[in-house]
Length: 224
Image (tube, rainbow, N blue to C red; front, side, top):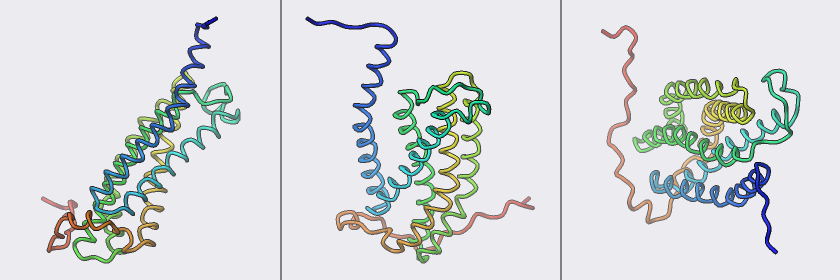
C-alpha cells in the first residue's frame, strides 16, 4: 500500500532532503567550472587551485559564523531573534553559490593586476605588491557597499533573512580583508614562480607579454 503525507512539515522535510542530496553535486560543479575557467584565463593550474582554496576558506568562515551565532542563544538579544538551534535548509546552498561568485570577482581582479606585473618583468614579490596596492581601493570600496547592503538584512524580523544577511556580510568582510589582503598575497609570495606553472598546452597559448611595465594611475589630488 502506498501512502503520502501532506502539509508544511512534510514539505519542509522533503525540501531539506533534496538540498542535502544536491548540495555535493552543486559544489562539485562550481569547483570544477571555477578550476577550468581560472586555468584557461590565467594559463596556470596553481592559480586555479589557490582560487578554489581561498574561496572555500571564505565560504567555510561564513558557515562557521552562522553556526556560532544562530545555533546558540548568546546573540539573541543583540540581533533580536529566538534561536531555533539550526540553519534554515535553503541557506547553505544559496550562500555557497552567491559567495563563490562574489569572491571570484575580487580574486580575478587582484590576480589580473599581479599577472600584469609579472608579464611586464617585475619579480614575483614586486608584482604581488603592485597587484594588491593597485586594486586595494576598488576592492575595499566594493566590499564596503556590499557589507552595508547585506547587513540591512540582519535587521529584518524573519530568521532566514537574518541568517542570510549575517552570512553574506561577514563573508564579504572577511574575504576582502583577511583572505584577499593577507592570505592571497602571502600565499602567492611564498609560491613564487610556481604560481604560474601550467601544462605545455596552456603555456603554448599564452599571450606575449607586453614590452613596457604597467604605469601607475596619475594622482588626482590637485589635478585641474
